[in-house]
Length: 264
Image 1 (spheres, one colour):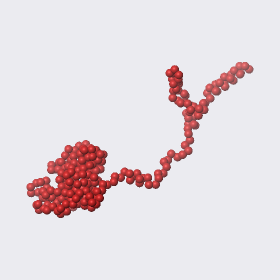
Image 2: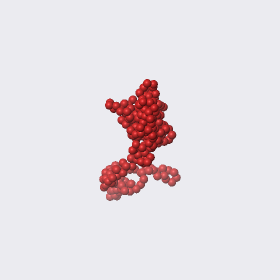
Image 3: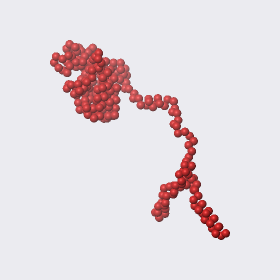
Image 4: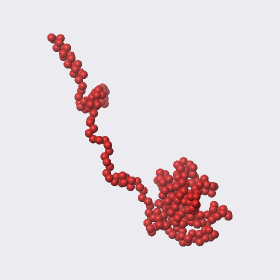
């Protein structure tokens, strides 16, 4: 009888030894080794069997699907990313476009046949970009330049040096022949229909130069994008690939052709 009691007690001890520890009690203890007095590192507390962890996982009572956004939130976000266009007001603008700053000028008489400009405007700034020096043009050409600045020049350098700050103007109205060649036809410059741009000036003082940067790295890609964007607003677009006369600037003019814009 005594031996049976001993065996029974031993069985109870074994059962108690392997009895699962309550999950709540186990989770209240850190699995990270605990620093014991004297500097000894204690042993890691053994993790309960995987089945117990699964059984004790919290029950998701709410759907993880995002809530419906408040009405109008998308429109607010879109409005926050729209850049407001520059406006100089009616008193400071010309050609009926608030984004073109300048002054109306007196008619320019023809010095040679084919030259002259009846209603010139002296443009000093376009869409926030200062023209250096100011450009003397007719209004259709000033409007085309405005379109190119907004859709071509400014986007092309938006991530460079803080963005565009100005344009380096190489030529605007000038009573001369094409490429200053004797015997050639009168240039569109002689009619106020052309403007030559040598560089886009950046807000940090740097510049994107046609002469120095064409075909080189990021600035070269920006110039390519600007050249392409001019085809449409302008009837003629010439750059360094056109000929040796345009290696240091873009030539834009508003002459129109039945076949469409001429871009090289």
